[in-house]
Image (cartoon, rainbow, N blue to C red; front, side, top):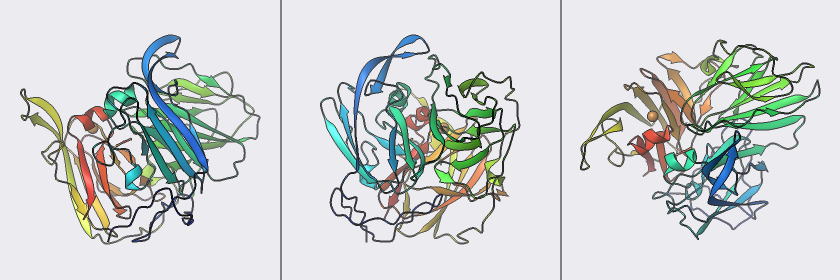
Length: 419
Ligand code: C2O
Ligand code: CU
């Protein structure tokens, strides 16, 4: 039996999840949200924004790119009113990495219709998971996100000590990057940098001037992360990393692809040619929660010719088919589901499943031995084979796609459905 979805009524408190452990919903649980405690309005409109000293024609939320940072504490009920002033192609809000009830997921044609100029849509969900997330339009998402319809969503466990800042990094394709931000921090202050890659391709992040720990990936806290130094991290399109450190007396800088984007003072001379952290082996391991799977799927990623239109064009394919012809993955509520992704193409495909976090089991036959890694966005590189698993605990119809949004639009989108 599918869970009844009740939106906007009832006051039953949802059980809070321990940090880093995705909230598992009871089968048949009624997900009430209660009275909103945090209200936001996001108005999408064409706008001219100033980036890197240039005026750029953008699509913006409340006149800014990125859009306003939405913040909440665990237990808050968020109510976000989306208005579309003049984006002819429509707008929605998708809460990237936030496992909201299906009706709030913001996928046009699947969970709602796109919001047209002059219309609005109200999203409501309870903040059950702390962590770093982001939101973006899912209507013509490749164009919409590139033009600026995205922002950060940060859910903090209260109270927060020290400095807690977010750094969304988006290299607006072909557009100038924003000027680096400088934020002086007193020595001894704990700092948490919340990094999000809101772009369609991988970026390399390095912290110069201090040892640090990777506290969380894709919103979930890691178990026992050790301090590392002179190490870079690669963040997949859509992915997030939280880095924590104690501010030293000397400046610290965050470099993205070798370029400083945030610092606490004059940027220290540094290389970014450091070794790259392998998240699969980082942190303290724990026994796998599942040893058998109710269902297993294989997704083979490739490139093929799409002959359905007037002219043949290249498509990014899954099991030889392109959206909307890729058969859905059908699961039952409560199933433990494994899927293997095999990349036979010459492209990196950053994979993103909506509504669920997947536990990484292995990559290229190498078991994940570090902290249990619950991801919503991960790079499947050419030749890679990833095996991941999740519990089917969030009924609905969910997009499962490549987060290089041009690839997603060119066929590489399928759906997960509950029978
Ligand atoms: Cu961040 Cu389906 O998207
Ligand atoms: Cu792709």
